[in-house]
Every structure is written in C-alpha cells, then in structure tokens.
Length: 173
Image (tube, rainbow, N blue to C red; front, side, top):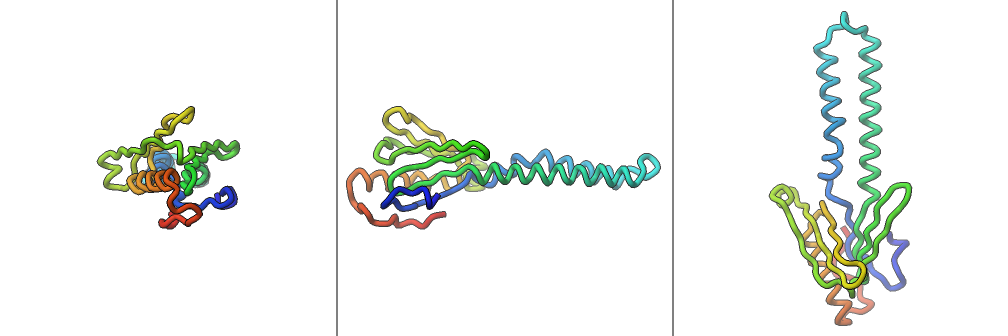
C-alpha cells in the first residue's frame, strides 16, 4: 500500500481482518486431521494395508496444508488502510477490488462488538459517508474502537485544516 499513497499522503493504520477469520475457516481441515489421526491409531493394519493408510493420511495432510495456504492468502489479501486523507478497502486474490472513502465525506463512524469480539479484540466498524458511497460495514477488524477513533480524528483534522502536511501521530499497525 505504501506505493499506492497519494503525494503528500501519510499512512495512519493498515490492518487485516482479525485472525479469528482465518481460524474459523480452518476448523473443517482440523477436524478431518483429527479424525484421520484417530483412524490411524485405532484401525488395525488387517482392515487396511499400512501402505493404504499412509497414502490416505499423507493425502489428507497435503489437502489440509493446501487449504491452510489458501485461507492465509485470502486473509492477507484483504485489508483496511487508513491514511490522513482516505480509507481504502482492498480485497481479492486474482482479481482485486478496492473501495476508497474520502475522509472529508465521512459523516459517522460506529463500532459493534459481540462478547467474544470484546474478549478477543475484534469487532465491526461502520463508516457512513456522504454521497454514493453510503454506509460501509467492515467486520472482524482488530481494535475496532481504535480504528473508529482514528477515522474520526483524521476526518476532523482534514475537515478543519489543522495539521495539513503533518504526519499522523499514530504508528501504522
């Protein structure tokens, strides 16, 4: 994203969705791996030859590894970037989608967190922008209150002209 910044634009925050998204996508291969491990332990070699059990186990482990790689690539390819001028939402692996919300168009920013989200530190951030952009709901973001506050601070700073050309005070995450 650093190469995609506009002239004079400063990076404030860049985050990916919370790690719980990746974990949620991995529960099926984890269950399958546990079942295969249990089958390897409890099925005697008289029912299935050792070579067949080994081939099936290695095949399942390879598929689970491939699944984990795909989940990781999908997780890494989706991000939210907040600069001192705009919010950029990027997603996609082969074909990319990018949505830009100008901070001077932001009217309201709110957050929602479930109990589990509060415990693990994730939630939804809703950005209401004027015009055709409308409302954008960003779910499963880490530190949603910090993101909400930073969007508000940068929006107000841009609107009131204070700090023009000054780098943002918060480091990128």
